[in-house]
Length: 484
Image (tube, rainbow, N blue to C red; front, side, top):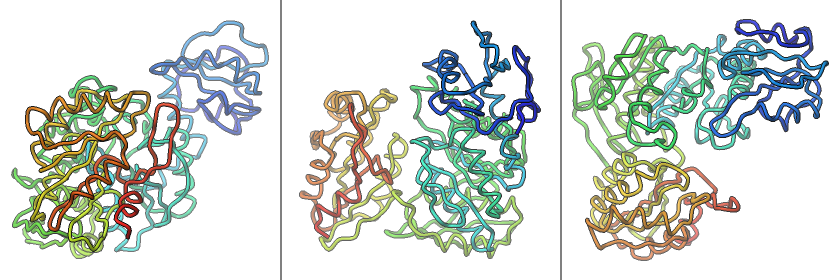
């Protein structure tokens, strides 16, 4: 595709060269530059991509997008300057891949917790009416129910270029709907700029990512951006930030709740060990639902999915069947079967609210003690460490603090920051930095009727250390320790 066609819809100025050059690929990584590759230089949070323009040129790139003027421009290099490379990249990537989102019914799910489960729930409903679906999220990327081994590092939402590449593939494979997790980072960094969503779901907002957003207000404002890009907003009004989300929304709204009045309010909730039953008033009809995923938070996720389905005009019977067909979501309140007489549950909970939700959910069906293994990630929001310690100490019978992707930090130092929140509450806790040993200790002290929660990593199968990333899977570790 010619550069002039890729640039359609952008606002900028040609500094050097011409826009007739043929472009075969786009990149923001100079290491991937080469002949025919358009290199987009942008000012990042820690690195200025403009300093890599010479490297991109050496690798063969002869076209570059910049945010400011550069010195010593080679005669044979085309330079096009824009005010915001991130905004321009969203337009250019869409142009390059033939604006694939316009051929798809886009559904976005945002919030601190519940994004992954909600996408699975929506997928299940749509599969009931034989629609071809694709899911983009934290756990995996699926097209028509099949996992695709495409690595987008550890981002919830793919890079702008990769996202459009994936949407092109999904459109070409005949997908009707794409359900994707939309992170606050992706909204703030304009990864989904220019995409029009049929529906956007707001699950909740609790403390997380303050290392990036700095304040909860900034975090909320980032999430709220999605609801200026939607036709329908499906909003959890039980969440304290929902008023702020709706205040800034530029779309039709469908609200859901358990406690407050709303369009879709769950009533007569029955919490069981392996499922939850509830009723929802839908257009005057009291519709009973049974969901094979336990916990109060699962009801919220189901309501978000139900609201999305209603915004698409789906029949209530199909929605009910889709909810009934839902099975366990990988790494979300996932039970590890064993014959010891106690529960072992792996869950992704890695925020204060997520941890509180999973412990409360497990407490509902546990006759004995709740033993919780958890940690906090390194190089991330440090303020939540003592908060998570206090929550676990208050709600669990025994807390075992361990490592969870310590990254460049010393594991023992992270554990001590968590301990600040535990000490004033209880003395029934242990600190074991090695995660395998911590899981082993929890299982070794569990008795009949107890529940062991292994929180923080869920579906992840790695542990990020200071100098390397190693394979580590909580489910594998638990099964090996149980010997089953």
